[in-house]
Length: 139
Image (cartoon, rainbow, N blue to C red; front, side):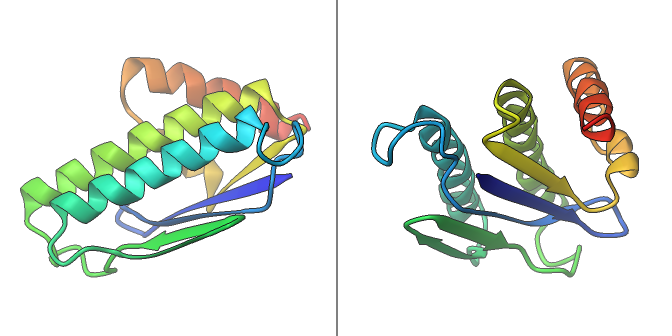
């Protein structure tokens, strides 16, 4: 099982994310669930590395990935911070959809999950989050 963690600070900014383990959907090398998660998280890391100067701290290895942004909300410009949060929200919404499709292969951990709804305000993400929260609470 792959475990994915998203952390946001008290101001509502996503400040870090990580993943560990293989999903077990298929043998290593043929696992489309693991490949999808890996592609989404690596795309987020590489996108953040391009728009953020300096780049966030990250680590990528065989079954682990982590990325941590500076905790100071003033570290990046307001425009860059908005771009960062858009990338991370997009990644989170995509991962929620995969988690809903493959609940026995992925676990998505959100610190303080009941307060994430205010972070994801787009119309389509609201429905995804509502469905995700309902599925998470009932598991």
